[in-house]
Length: 363
Image 1 (tube, rainbow, N blue to C red):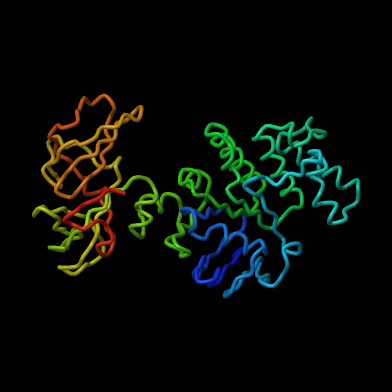
Image 2: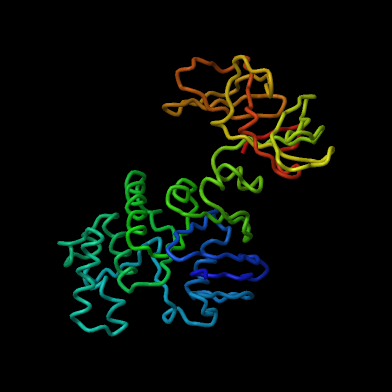
């Protein structure tokens, strides 16, 4: 049985449909990330699970028990907010103890649990400090300790690392993942940061305009995107629109702009004449050496130094393509090159969901 079940959830704000018939299951002990751009509905979905918003349609169940009509304070959930929501007048110890006191636990049990949480989150010795006396990372740990102290069935996190600087964010990301694995707590985690979602989660649910685009493991989402939106939002994908010219032996010939043809491996039988989009990530495309299949001519329009790599923007018959290459390769803007698109790195999407064949585009 799923730990958390969302069934056909709908939430409207006036004429705007913020969440559009989202169904999702989260397993016990799983960390699932809700990933998408601002305004895609991920925080609205999280707030419905918490009970802060009531769905207009659909149902929510935790451990098989319906909670759609249950008020927030009676749900077996706890939430960590983006701004941590720490009380300026409460010490670390009193903040962590707050939920336990609301539940009227015995004082001895409260002291024991607070000490346990402070030790778990590396806050021992900071019991008497106030939020203004803590660093951003320490404040985040206090918010986590307060939420975990009540032993929620599901921990809800709304972009909890967004206010930290880049290096601390990476450190806290690893710390949070280790903590989740140690405790086995089920977590529903909202973020717009794709790297955060891929590195943290057991599975990722990608949302766009209130709809669920795809649910899968980080590798599935990255390597086998189900839609052009997922392909473009996760990483840097080149999307090339074309038409199936031939289909045989587990391989498709896709005709693209300029009379060129790409060979694409596919287990699906797609009728000749069907509109498709070929996707390939910037790191999977390369400058051709001796290859003859899936090679396109082009001219380097832009070369951006990224440290270990250099990202090239190349004008080609397929449109503008991004190609990552070693930083010391020695290519220059304006140079004529040939781009190789390896057949085992091409991914096929249904329909001309990518750029038009006559224009080309890179997402």
